[in-house]
Amino acid sequence: MEATAYDPSPESNTIDWAGITALGWRTRHGIAAVDPRIIALRRLIYVDGYGFAWTGDTGGDIKGKRIDLCYNTTEEALQWGRRKVKVYVLGTKPMSYYIEKRKNKNK
Image (cartoon, rainbow, N blue to C red; front, side, top):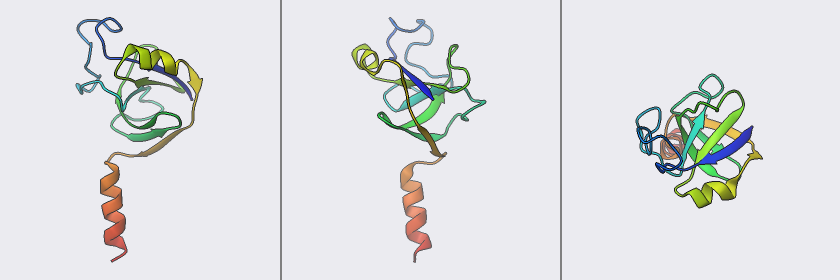
């Protein structure tokens, strides 16, 4: 996928939406904007070079195989730039859920 980055500041967003995702979550590192036709919202994903994120946002330019990764500052977002990445869809629950489930299965 092609990945870009954004930050939640009012300077980078409209005032009405600064700091709030399409789901109403607070924007922060670990939130990704996706096209819900490609990756559903509320999914835990892993992005090479970025780490774990929740798909909790959409964007006007995020169509098809594109993803927009939230950073806490404009500087971090600019450092990311635009690049090709592998994205792994892991699920809808936190990793601790899957770890606990695996422990219980092995008992």
